[in-house]
Length: 288
Image 1: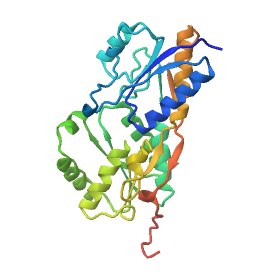
Image 2 (image 1 turned 135 degrees about the vertical axis):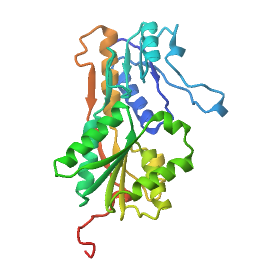
Image 3 (image 1 turned 90 degrees about the horizontal axis):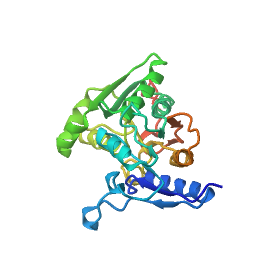
Image 4 (image 1 turned 120 degrees about the horizontal axis):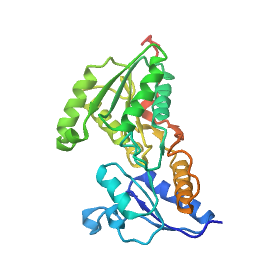
């Protein structure tokens, strides 16, 4: 049995799937040595707390960290910490020598395409981030599967910088114009559930019905968004438990100085949680 370790999870636990990941790491730690796990506090300004960051771990006497490493500043902090770090972020394609565990985003996009194809759809769209690795991988898997049917997907990419400067009204207006340019009976994959929710809001604003005119699927299976949207939102499920186990096992091997194998571990998504936003079969004969 491995020795008891002190492991920090540097990621916002307010995300529902992250809370599930924390539980998965905890279960691994209990099975292999009774780990002490340091999690992030709430990051709401009203709580008086600040989010846990890699910088906040400088001087901490822990054994390792599981974190989101997505910039040169983050990589420099990993070097300063002097403890093993496993990256959960798919923001960049280059690992920069830091081991990573993430969902198989290309497979996730493929599963979303298959779900929409099974509903008889022949027109497709994708909404996501430009220049962000996991978004590009989700689109690649989505479009590759659609191309296999002799079809193609129309993509709309925004940059994170543009989104930061936009108002909600501006985002909905731009999405609405794009949606109106697509053929009806179109299936759309959004890179995240909250983007999918925006797509459905934009559909309503321009008179498009979900799922009759536009079928929408998101990713993350965030119950707060998916179960409370109108209509409820179909989503690709991350497989947080599988990612948690692989990340915990990897940090365990790194701390013990064991061979870690692959630096980039991809965990298959758990599947599709179907809800109202895709709950309709589209037949080419509208009378049927």
